Length: 480
Ligand SMILES: Cc1cc2nc3c(=O)[nH]c(=O)nc-3n(C[C@H](O)[C@H](O)[C@H](O)COP(=O)(O)OP(=O)(O)OC[C@H]3O[C@@H](n4cnc5c(N)ncnc54)[C@H](O)[C@@H]3O)c2cc1C
Image 1 (tube, rainbow, N blue to C red):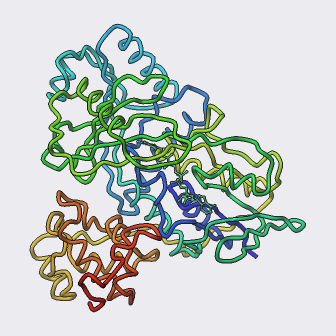
Image 2 (image 1 turned 120 degrees about the vertical axis):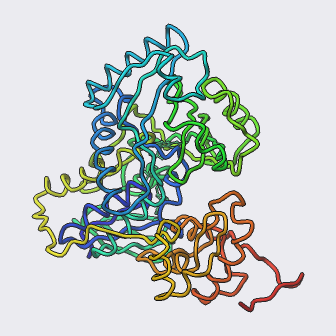
Image 3 (image 1 turned 135 degrees about the vertical axis):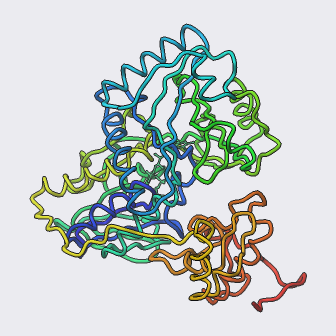
């Protein structure tokens, strides 16, 4: 019998797993996909918002501000790429100026530090590529950028090192109750538990309705992006937003922690949950971005992608015990700023258990650190020393990003090992560069085959079913 079953391994479920792993509890995280962070968490703007955007008094406001502070600490402890680069919300007319002042006041009310209002000239001095039509801006110094998938992986890996079980490829299909205990059925087996924390993102309403009444509905909303090469990565040094509208925070232009430039998203309700990009959506993003940064060179585009927001039919985050099922908790409707808020949302789970009289004894040996080897960041002497100990660090596999075989092997030997080419990419950046894996994917596939004892036909690009080879009959071989 488990104490807690967490359903969903995005940033929210991974944060819950991390915080619960501090205590003497038997916890399992069930994830439908073959990897952590393969839902909305891997496809967003990657901003840790400062917290001036949500209205005062909302759950979004409180958890955004607390979550952003926790994110800074967690990323430092768990070696997650994070940079407090700051953000600007720029304005072009009187209406925008009113909005900039509203956001400033709201930020102060929400407890955001480091806010300033700037005039157009100062904006251009700080960010020379911003349009010369700019008249004002809100500067938010505490806004940051992060690697969202590494953030979730780091939390989930740390939870595993502290005793939480993570079961991938375990889509929950049914939930029933026998007295005080739940039985959670997945495509792979059954798990008995006393509490359920539902972090199933876009499917949180369906998971809740496996046992509860219809209490909320998830409304998917797609956002599309351009990711530009590092040649454009210094176009801005802060995240540049336009003033928000009823559809959200609008199109931003931002550096990424990996040195690229990201431009997007649009907002479009899409009932089919599709993450396909469309010409219409991308054209909208491109044209809208020109208003803020007219000189972005879209010829440097290396990838387009889309993510789907889990909006709900309630205006705020849903963060409560189910109204129809005791001991079943929903962390649902986690649209933006969900990435920023996640650790703060997860702390509520600890409180929920305490409020039920659980003693929650802390573990004496809780591991609260993580270190990743990034070969290209080492000094010459450190590189030589590492290669002497482990020659695989002497073989560069991804030439765009200078990622070595040693780092790829590490990605396959972490507490939650990669099982696909993209899983390797999310853990060590192989394939993240200008050629987007054009050169190294084949080599990564060979390493996967050798390490995981796979036949070539079994190698996945990403999710189940994304096999990169489907037939040997037209040449090629299963030999490594
Ligand atoms: C376009 C866009 C831009 C955004 N920009 C930002 C931003 O800059 N800053 C910010 O703070 N937030 C941003 N967000 C919001 C942020 O990305 C989300 O709030 C966050 O990723 C949600 O995390 P999650 O864990 O709730 O969901 P997910 O990451 O989707 O995780 C849910 C998991 O549950 C699993 N699951 C579903 N059903 C089942 C089942 N039956 N059984 C088992 N597992 C199941 C899924 O496979 C998935 O892995 C953005 C979102 C989008 C779409």
